[in-house]
Image (cartoon, rainbow over the protein chains, first blue to last red):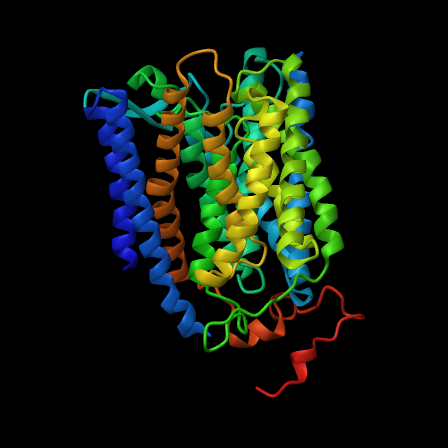
Length: 59
Length: 429
């Protein structure tokens, strides 16, 4: 889960970069940057979730 | 004239480190107080050495030599290519044109130290001193300089305007470069070290482990204000293009955002718990300073006040969410205060900033790209580096050290040997 979270974070970042490189229109860029940030949020959520069981084991 | 003012402001920055050190120490347990302060000193010392020897070369300065590559038809300036071991800095005054470069090195050296000490708050009471030193070296030697180059050293984020027709990512006071990078490091440390023993019960209920000296915490807030004024003013001159005449505005804005943050936290905690919570209010004060440092003098005092108030409000809820819902044991609230408020500060630049060029939409988009770089690239990098380091040098103290306290375990003597008796030292285990 943690690995997938990290990969999603990176994927979101590359979506944002792709939006800058490939798209010219402002609204298109906004849409893709927002999508990239949403993917990053998903990755962050998974990474956080992946650390919850570890916290439980260490108690 | 502006460089002299800048030098004077840089000299105030260590007070921010002193303030944060007191806050971290006060919010931790008394049995780890000396360890927290020594850890801070070690982090500052190691980060200064590694930044000057290696990091400054990679952080670079705008217009200096860089490592770059071409991709997608664009030029990506991603890392500085200056001289290692501080060779690019004029120390004998023979190169008057190099004064700006020397001042940049000076400020970034302290900024790297500030970023390196933020994770100590999240790893309080369990993070060993050896890994603290190695982690600080990696942060100041490579991680911090990488993002500092992108923003302060004329890297690809600073060039978003010229390369992609947007506007340059704006972070004059280091809300992203210093605070978010340090806050993300704090998150990685809290995840890897895990919660303190006794923090969560078997059914997942969080126990309150209050800080041991709230007076030190609140005094730390006052010291941090002075340091932050220096940091914001100096970085506005060096990286935000501000003149001396704009510095009073920067000072007023720093005070406005800190005040807004603290008062918002006082009001929220009073409304929720019937009495103001001193430690959360202190966190609100620092959150205000953190959020306000992104825009510095680029906003009106009212906008700085709004930025600070929203930061103070956010932080009180974020600290609770991290502790209760996400089960991240962050004794000093470093993740919420530095990463959370820092990210809000970067957004606030796009919302409230006064920019002479470009549309507000372009500036907002540039800020979002910067935030995406912080979360999408810097967080996996920071997390991966810390995870790898934890394999070779375990972050967490062993089970005995956890209840014995880091002072006795790692230093052999307590911070308050004559006054403190831990109630649970005599409980059979």
